[in-house]
Amino acid sequence: MIHIKLSSSQISNIKEKWAFWFFKAKRINKFIAVLDEDAVFRQFLFEKADYNEWKKQYKKRTQVIKCKDWQFPVMAYFFEDLSDKDCVLKKYAKKLKPSTVSFLLCAYNSYRQSITLAQIIDEIGIQVCPYCNRNFIDRYALSDWQGNKKFYYKGDLDHYYSKNEIPALILSFYNLIPCCKVCNHEKHDSNLRTFHPYYDYEDEEYCFSIELYSDEDEVDIIYEKPLKEIENKRYDSTVWQGVSDNFKIIFKGIHNSELDESMENSNKVFRLEKKYNHSKEYVKELIRKQYIYPEIKKKELLKNFPEIFKTESDLDDVFFSTSSLTIDKAYDRPLSKLTKDILKQLG
Ligand SMILES: [Zn+2]
Image 1 (spheres, rainbow, N blue to C red):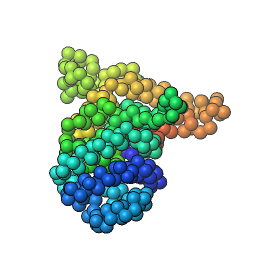
Image 2 (cartoon, rainbow, N blue to C red):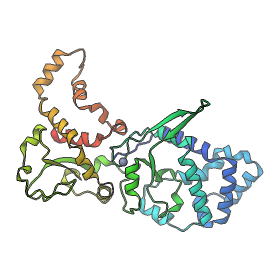
Image 3 (cartoon, protein in one colour):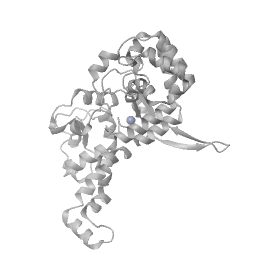
Image 4 (cartoon, rainbow, N blue to C red):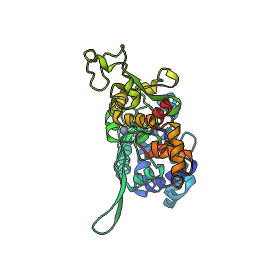
């Protein structure tokens, strides 16, 4: 799981694109009709601002929809910080009028298919699903027969709080998590509170680790096949040369502590341990590289190829792609968290 970090300039670019998409006269007319009818929804947006005054300004001069001050209550609502999960539930888990829900769903569907969404995902800069850190989430441009370019986002958007659980957040930016189709499908219908990529920091919470099968293991992780008949699967030291499959990749709290609730839930919902145990070939490759790469060889390579390897970290990068493991590059690379943790474990 990868934390999505947004700088203030990224957030302001995203807001600008979103506002350009949302504030259209046709949509605002419907929005006002919905706000007129639904006092609960209206209260969410106009707790501090005066709704009647806001509406009056629009009726007097429709051009006001381009004005940032006028847009403010709407933007503040759809971009509200949702980091306090208890507070979010307490405040927003309320019934809305069917016309409000239908307005929000309709606007969400239009956003889902809009160029704006592809541009916003581009601004976020994420290439790999933040839940599984395994699948790419693509976006690209295609030209039609008239040469008009259209942008497409081919990943999914997960409603962190589902549409049924909290309809008020159907269109809220921090409730919409760009992710892969598999994770979105797996999270669907689950009310377990998982990792939130905008607010939770994976590095402080958990790590992947290689462990040998021991006497305690009854079954293998992926297929849950009994290990009893295959005694030589246990305590196989050739694992540390990267030639054996007799190990498991586990998901645990950092410093062997228990996983916290959201991480435990994420492991359950996204089946992380099962999925990551399909990456054994990749992990074996990392172990092999580490095994054949002692200090003496490092020095030899640095001496023999000064034109290629300027520093030791250039060399590490060629062997282990270490430069792509920094936080801001973690978005671009599947298995970046696994790679980082395993390299750490191997020293
Ligand atoms: Zn995923």
